[in-house]
Image (cartoon, rainbow, N blue to C red):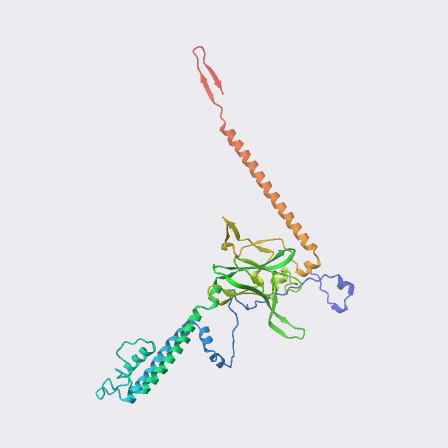
Length: 416
């Protein structure tokens, strides 16, 4: 028989009866929120309905650098080809105006440009002038100042085109995000106890021997918040400090480092427990900036961690060891973690009740002792079993030897 559910409203129920009923915490299901920063560092933002498209043309050089390689190469080729065709038309008009196209009427000395008798020859002369090839067959003379003016204009235009296009190609090949490919982050972040406080930790490293000068690390928590006035902020960025925070948060990235954030009362993670973290929609963004030692270009590497990528109660394994006077880094264990004793409560509850940490550590010590006892007992039992088996094998192998001694007087049997 199913129990009947009470239909008495809560406001008409007895206060004592209502107070005795325990209220369980309700955890809402986590909604699959889009990442703000991908694991590779790219920003997950789509710009739509931009009406003032002309602003991009005001900064042509940056626009060319930001374009994809296929568009840049097409623009590079078309720029030079169009300039050659444009000035080829100019040389052809100069020859046409001076009457140089009539080969039978004039000699090569009276022409503005020698051996320019058609548009094809004018196009070849335009290429020779702009790229300074100079095969020697075609050359300008002193007959018309217009040809000299066109020559000066084409040289100036070729210098500008070469500077812009070659500079664009150089900047695309030496972009700062290329150096960021060798700056790595751990796939998972961890939350564990360090020096008696809950800490959010991650590991960063540099695969190259050339260092990043003045490297700085910044952490931000991005989440959707609502103000008391009802304003919804879809991307609310909150800066959080690292453990060894200075005025610039600079680090010496000689070997892989563990970046630690102490979860204190000023941290946005202060009220999150292990259960609430699984249901939260926060995203921790990590930004590593520095100057490349070889090129002097400022580079930036980014990544982010969502709730599923934060392991509660884990710690990174050490990967730096000293071998024959040299510090060795094992990058195969870069993201490996081990489980450690960590309270599942929030940092606020841990500050209000420090005994929780003591009880957790005592339980972990007892569990370690019990595991050690079990291991020692199993080893003892295994050794005893091995000893018994060895005795049995020795007893089966010890067979009595029988010797027959015969003499001339009487035969005898001797057992040894």
